[in-house]
Image 1 (cartoon, protein in one colour):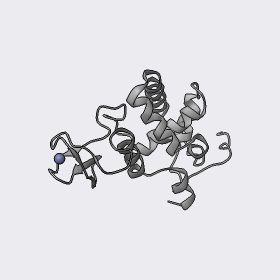
Image 2 (cartoon, protein in one colour):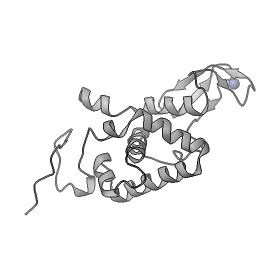
Image 3 (cartoon, helix red, strand yellow):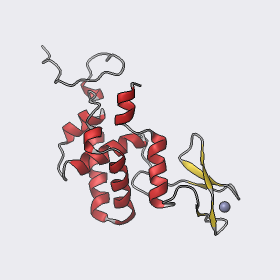
Length: 170
Ligand SMILES: [Zn+2]
């Protein structure tokens, strides 16, 4: 991935770190372990959306029970969606969101609805939206413009990005 795209789009690890700090530990590692019943150091578990207690090994999944749970989308997509939705007021166009994120219209609709719902409900999910959006503000969320998958008529070149609308199809 080109360096510019990396700067524009956070990694899933960065997003998970933001979720962890927002919900469990503002200063990073020490957090309340539900098993030990005390503040412990936690370290990230590879290839899982989890952190493990250094004392008892208990795994905490920071995104569990939030609007991010039960989603197969990468956390970075949620982060970019949050940046886009919060940066554009409450009514960003679904089609525009789909193009910006490189997802289908249906997925964009679901992302926008869940993010707006989280903001309206307030509390934990609203704080998560704000934190993820801060990681990926609308300006950055816009930087890598991909065609939505369903609009792709043929194979796209790798890292296909466009800064101008595609030519009209005949
Ligand atoms: Zn523990």
